[in-house]
Length: 513
Image (cartoon, rainbow, N blue to C red; front, side, top):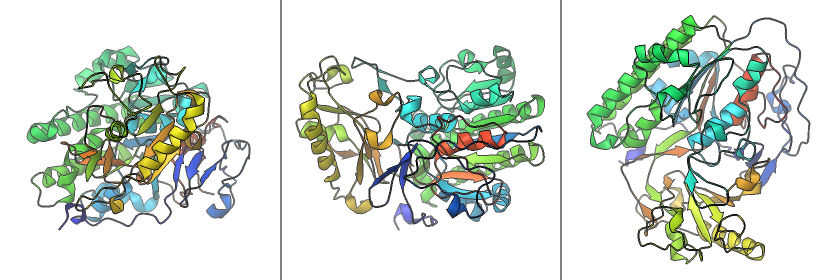
């Protein structure tokens, strides 16, 4: 039996559209968008279908209804890399009984991630309610303007305010823990502990007075997952210890601190999935049982967090993306080299500084295509007259690629769609966007490696991100969930707090009629 078939999977939703911010792709490949966000209000029509905005609407941001002056609280637990199919499987098998008890009383649905489907982009979309053309984060790495020098964007590079900034202006106090791309910590009305990538705990905490309490509880920002496949016992022990420390801190702050908005993300799931997803799908694998044991431990934590909330508190469980089994890694820069579109000044290129000035195109993780344009890069050679034909050539070539390896998913077609930047993004940061974004079929994990010569390969990683099946759950029934997108979370949370979402948010408020 193929490993991918060893564990039954719930069927995916029939309607799989692609969306990023206020733009999305329909099943026929056509682009739909709303240039202004459309918002569900508390006075929505009785039928969720009737309440959904037209894809062609130009409706201005709906006026938020007045709310009584009573205290509202909202809790959001983020489960990095957890898809709805995984939750459905583990609850059905009795691995997560406490979560299984929560689900019937609320709304569970698949949620679309960001494009590209990478945590720094997705979680920034969650906290801003905006597409990358507004918040400015396009990946874990980016290129400094006017150079070929790469850097790691952090919280200081996020150009938009967060949902807790908006809530704070309305007098709401927030506890924000371990949200990726919130380093270094910055001031807010409340507490913040940065998530991945936080390199210094002292700069990851606001206010600084919180730091001794974190150390007392043995808090860790992240599990040590380097070479996890080579030291599985140590990795699983560290995974459990990190989750236990997170449990102590989350429950203590929930009990001891005043708060209106609580956000706590658990990133251990993602680390586990990347290295051990093959162990999950194969019940005979040596680390299948430790994989399930981690989720039993996580289930107990989720139950404890739910019990710690004041009665009636809205509770969200959400993910930035899902996971699936990697069939092969895919190296688009190898294809560009074979086509003569990318050259290097070194036989073993280590970075963009080794790009030959004659190069036309290069790719950054995970499938962001950049023309080597004059005016954008210091030695760029591509001018406006050449750009459109070059983009068309790259798009057509990537779409035509085929994989003839045994068991190839998606009919051996690794690239089903290639998007132009204007199809996905809009806003003041659009000029920093990639020229094209490659959407990869499930099973083909994109990598921006420069030195690869082969188109496909494998590494120690066995799990890759998925776009269309991120977990969404809220303990409220009847939430309109058709076309649910990660940017919908920020305006929805603000609405439940009684705070009007800003008109520049791309997401829609998702509340039952």
